[in-house]
Image 1 (cartoon, helix red, strand yellow):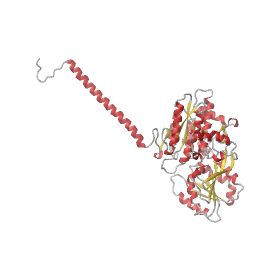
Image 2 (cartoon, one colour):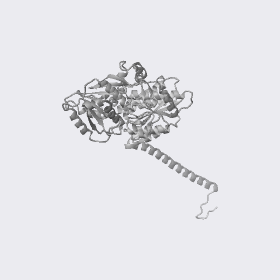
Image 3 (tube, rainbow, N blue to C red):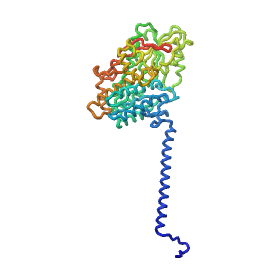
Image 4 (cartoon, helix red, strand yellow):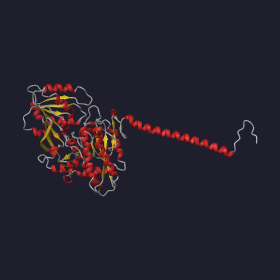
Length: 499
């Protein structure tokens, strides 16, 4: 059959095939486009993680620091890599065991690598996380003991500036399959810690502080009385006032002339508490022969060097005090001591201060300067029966696990590992008591159970002390403060005081 010019005649079946082919090409093109979109989306997510410089699951917080909550899989700091691996491995191990698992968080500032001065040192944070891990392992290795403990580290930034989003992340974890039941650690005694504690308390999440020493930074909330009580806040560390009482008792029989050197950073309740407690407890000594000088140690404030120069010049003059009551952070104590070095100062000077001075564990002092401080937990003292009646408990409950887990003793010098171990131990005991007769527990049940640890009969066996909590304040009862004398690169326990 002849087809008229200009007409395209094709059998009907062929036309259907062509139409189907066109549809297939469209679908292939759409599929290819979708694949490109997914590929670009994945690349964008990956690039975002790379561009923000933070590990997976972490984010940029205040001051552009990486913050967030990690189960050990994220890198919080290059100096924490080995202990993060241990935590991740333990969390993975218990996930495959079966049985009840709950989550406990360590809320802590972590210094930014290469950053400015932080509220804590890397050594202190490392010790704290090691203490939490050792308590986790000790708990999880007891056959048949439940709940098993999943550990997470909540990094709120080097000066705790990102406390709010990190705490809100923790609050969300209370609804997880392995629910968050308590928070330990809680940074140091600054305003951001108080704010974080109030927010956690409003959500009925119990807390056990490891190294909180500011007066009134407990359930009473007296540290900032206008904010009201902080329900559910316990701590294993004695207060600043108790530390100063221990120091005064040790020095009471010695003839000394004192100068009170105090930090004017009013956001740091550790230093303001030391200042007030030194002024009160050493009032007679300061009235008879003492003088007072101030400096401003607020992070980011310049001029500390000049202030220390002036104070050092005065101290090194003839007839001036030979003993400094130092109400400041140990992070600035190195710089202060440097101004008293023998090439500038031709006299012997003793610096008396609080528990933060344990940070000096790896610092060599000049020959003409020694430091006397009140330690929250000193490994030498805890292992010596002259200073600790529970020396065998310390070896069994802490030192043995430290060796078993391959933790170097150099990580324990500042005592933070021991204090965090004890904070975790108290939480674990409360969680175990709460689970008896129950199938499920959460933060409310653990908070109620902590109330049961407020008598001598229910004392917690910590790393070095057996202690319980004051029912009204949440402060520890029965803890021993060790007075440490540091000279050169050595330190020795010289006295003890029981809270």
